[in-house]
Amino acid sequence: MTRIVAAALVAGVLGAGVAQAQDGAHAPAQRSAEATAHRTTVMASPADVAMPPRAHALPDFTALVRNSAAAVVSIRVASRTTPAPSPADPPSRLDWVLRGLPGAARPDRPQRGVGSGFLVDADGTLLANAHIVDGAQEIVVRLNDRREFPARVVGTDAETDVAVLRIDASGLPVVRTGNPGALQAGQWVVAIGSPYGLEPTVSAGIVNATSRSLPNESWVPFIQTDVAVNPGTSGGPLLNLDGEVVGITSQIYSQAAGWQGLSFAIPIDVALEAKAQIVATGRVARGRLGVSVQEVDDALARSFGLDGPRGALVTSVDEGGGAARAGLRPGDIVLAVGSLPVLQAGDLARAIAGEPPGTEVRLEVWRDGDRMVLAAGIGSHDEGPDEVSSPREPAPSPLGLVVRPLSAGEREASGMHTGVVVEETGGAAARAGIHPGDVILAINGTPLKDPDQLHRLLENRPRQVALLVQRGDARLFVPIRLA
Image (cartoon, rainbow, N blue to C red; front, side):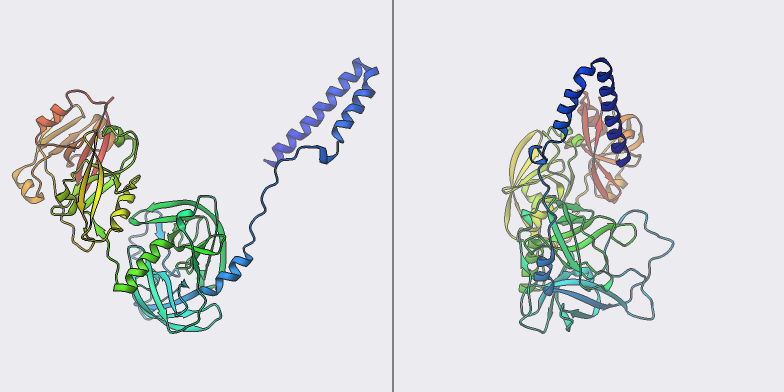
């Protein structure tokens, strides 16, 4: 880029020189006056030339770190030995990792690790990550002034990866907490921790995104940053420029068990809610609706007549759960819980998790092209899921499918009573990923009783349909474009 810009500047200068030489050849009498005017313009005072607005200076983090670092601690743990990963089963994709120092456990000694945390009250209560102390037999907390204390676990919450620890000390420095809801992409943030045991270490970056949903992490709206976070930093505070803790550093996205540009923090309000319940009862209770959902993409939104991709698409309803009692059914799209809009599937999980078991919520639902409101009772997240299977039956179809009804043996084995089994696939269905052996439970939210019904639902040649498919133990909606 520098060479290209320099070349352009040289060409501009040469071009100006050529033009002046040509002008001089045809009008020698004017050359002196024009040159004088040109020099006058070029040599104008800098004060007379409009300059672009000055960029803001980069922030100075020294005062922030000086005021906050005293409340950040290093945590050393000795844990039960765990077997090393099998070399025959190496990771095959990017993994969410941040689980203490790298290295396999050895059978002849305890597994040791290091993490970070921070003090939230002067009498020795601190927050850290649950995965740091999981299975720990011994925990030692080292303060910023190098004093060390044994720590005990008050409680942990694996769903949010929050641990509450306590040490026997008083008069300790504490952090100030802020509002993570006020964070915006592009704002500066700072992390303090003990990467690889190097304490304390400060790193800075910006917020990349907020309310980020991660794989298998439906409860936490993570703060995504480009702050350098490595094993050992996990559990430390993420601070805004006012020196307020807005999150707990928790995870990185990496192929090498080290930071590769993406790190994620648990919002501090989520962590403090978990802490309050742990301190009060020793555990965290969450609400449960009794549904499985998936994201609504653009194709599915068109299939269900929704004006855009939003909401949580219900793929299954647990028998006897709050959703079933409220009349929620597969193919419904939940658009809001009370006054909280559901823009993504994770929003529904988080909204319901925050409701106490035994209460009732208002669900705004999109069904058959219309909005409706359902009142659903909230159960306990501790309840085991009662999976409800929906069955099917046969037929060839414009989708490019050959289908048949479920046999009596298949109905009995699966518990399904409606639906059709895919025997052959081609055309639009094959391009969309439908496989032989899939069971089609519904089309555009209408449960299928037999293959003839599938044909009838396709008689008006819709441009797009959404099939609810049972594949093994999983259910998903598959959008198929027909025109």
